[in-house]
Length: 322
Image 1 (cartoon, rainbow, N blue to C red):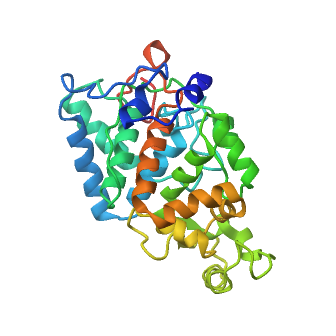
Image 2: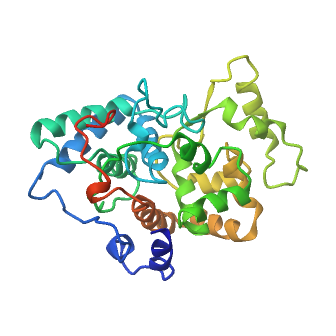
Image 3: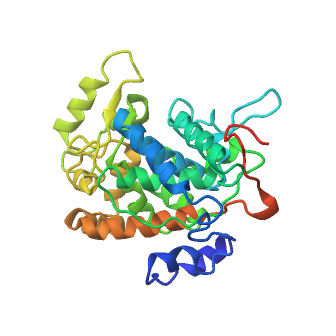
């Protein structure tokens, strides 16, 4: 399946619809719930809007839930552990990190009351991610749907497949390529870090940087401010991924990288290579270029390996298999 995705996107798509449904081989469609659950997207948007109004950080959290689900896009990340089953929530990239599960629960409960066993949890994640971007001044796009929810989860795959915050550039490239995403997709999708927060533990190696003062990962004033924040014993202290516009979806993330103010090591490392730096420059200079590429890359990522047909189900409760 992944080879088909790579082939489909070897030529830049002319439109977002072509980018998503082309010949990727999955049963994703636009407007799939028009007849079976016409209120679906409005219900999802309303819950996301309320959640973001109550906690601005929730926009980044819901976007991240979709990311962490979508080297699979089957809602496996939502499954709770049971006595005889271990899900993905305790995988290192997810443990004490992912948030927003209660928002998804509320959306699912509302949808089940209106149109039972119709809208999948995986589709909810995809739409909620889009709405989170829209509600924070980012771009909008039409989300193709038809994903089904997995019967199981894979903690090992979540552990090994999701890029870590201290990843090398080679590791980042490899993990994106492994699922059929390009270098440009990687840089565009990393722009999601224009919102949200991270714990001191996740960027501790940035505080020990021994690079020369002119290096791409060295901004002494920025690093000093992080060292002050993280100087206490609380490894769970939080820092903004983007200090300038922390609750707005914009291109500030790329501007920050060029000035050595990327919070995570896996962010700042992107400027260390000419090819990725060229993409970063283009996004820093023109928000519209970033927005367009981000939309296309989100559609590609959202179409990676979703369960379909008998390979999945529509869960009544996103936390447990029916």
